[in-house]
Length: 413
Image (cartoon, rainbow, N blue to C red; front, side):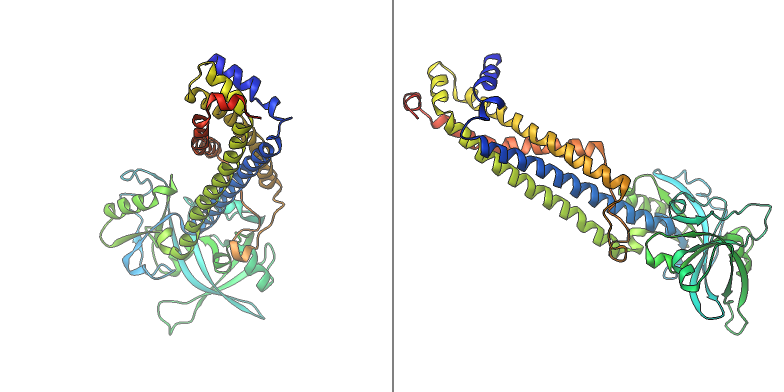
């Protein structure tokens, strides 16, 4: 083995091929590997990044799973209350994989100004609300403050979309009209104080939602403190959301239902699932092209080293030993391409991640810039997979070594 490695380094090593006939082809193969790795890293990082970003935006307004009354199944508002005293609240211990649960309620309303009006959904939240998602989208001002010292907080969080449309500024008062259960009654109006503006980039939510105090909806609906509209559940691993949803449904009472955001926003998640196919297709095509380039380079290298092959066979080396020499060298060349590909690819991803210089049309992709997801294990998997698949493809052309006879090879020029 040491002798073979010595031969591989001295006779067909990296320094030797630079002045050989095969040098341009080998350089092209290395470049193809490097560019392929760059494209694979970008495809995976941007594809998964976009999926996660859009998924987080939907979860910010709905949680991952919503537990609601069966009568509210097709409504965006809380028509019938649910008792706050549930076996799964405030900690969902009966189902593994749940990270947080919060009580909320929703009610339709209309914002009225002197010149215009806008229909909205007032989402009431309590002290258990998970603000970390919305905090990311906070543009100006601060998050609303709800505590026991304030019976009905009038602080709300408004989207920049609604603020720009109705010309609201920070600390302005927003008058919202709420319809009662009886259409004959006059609508109730409440003046809220705008303490913060958010912009999620998801227009479907931004143009509809106002975040305020859950107690306000309880008062408007004539509920007491023990009644809420629904529960929003967050899971630890989104890939297990279907399984967790099923387990939750089996756990809760028969008058309740559990719906995941994948079910509520099926069209969006079907669109996102297409990114998985695209990523796999891109990786497959790139590895195929890179492998073909390496096959070409190896064939040229073998033909160029025909006299050397004949000499080694004459000295007693078997076909597999000689084939390994070229595979060792091919692995080195692939590794060189992987090194430069990772260096350039990861560098470009880090630049985009921290500078956000490449924008996206927000109305189409729901994000203002290309999102980046970097995972060390995925990068390692891409590199190992590329190396192994390329080497497997090179096993076929290395069979040419077995067809070379020592007598003819030593006379080959």
